[in-house]
View 1 (cartoon, rainbow, N blue to C red):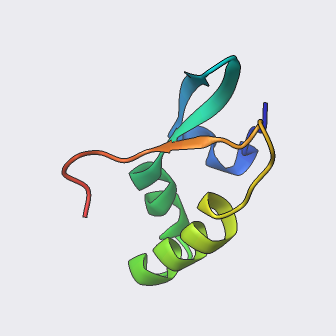
View 2: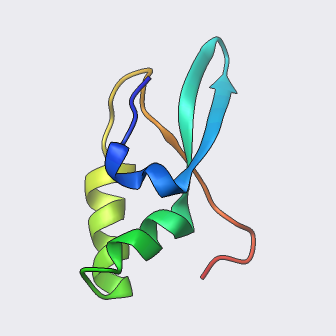
Length: 70
């Protein structure tokens, strides 16, 4: 299972898809963490391209989007 230690405060637990268990992170909490060093727009762009858009095979983490997220 791929774990992002730098996003530990956003770790929610695990999710299952078929027979695979993956790490589950709160999308907004990751963005808030990244906003310590950049604007929201920069944080979202960085996260979407470099993290959400990355494929780690079956270990690729999942990101939970709240229904009321911006």
